[in-house]
Length: 315
Ligand code: RIB
Ligand code: CA
Image (cartoon, rainbow, N blue to C red; front, top):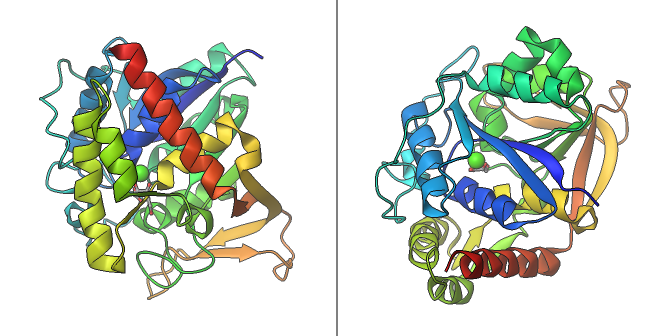
């Protein structure tokens, strides 16, 4: 089977970085480009971090373009450096990028690649959906030309920014709602399943032994784990973004339901909440495939195995 052409829109961010490595390690995927958005860190940082990760694996040839530096409407008062550190990739100890991002805006790059191969290119969006919403608004032809969109986002069983709000949706709820209304083949991989997609400290110890990528991967995961210990009291690390990528590699890793999903774009305490209408109470037609279940052990084995193969290939 030919590799799936893929664009990853992201906000590196430690789990974004691991997701990029997983995608680049996987023969099932043909990563055409990386695009960046503000989220885990300011756009300048998420962009530099994307370039740093590509340098780590010798892919300074791969297109990377920067996108939106702020959400569509409101800038949240969130200090996400709490999670990924001041750089957005703390613990990686990666050098400064070897190059600048492409001069093209992320939205223009996604549009160009989608129209070059109509119906073939998948977009994995693992940060706030600002770029994706702008694509839908500014380039509906290109948005419709995408094969599908897989989003890491949402929560129906406990959020991480409020009881029902997950960070990527919460950071730009208007963008998320615009994408949900835009009629694409949309899959949402939310916290309901990504909280089962974990690595342990034993896994990190093993990853640290990998040639080339081991120290950087282990360093950033250990930084991320310290946050998980603070919040959840457990020595685990959620691999939110990698699970969305793993679904593209092995679709059977996730169990999906097709239903109506909406986002609260109000300004109250529920802002950014995901309303997953499994029972069609709203009556609105199904607009997304919502991830309900995950083969967590198969995910963990896939991620660890692919990172090991990537390291071996590079050494
Ligand atoms: O809620 C988890 C999501 O928010 C992940 O994409 C993580 O990188 C952060 O962006
Ligand atoms: Ca992310």
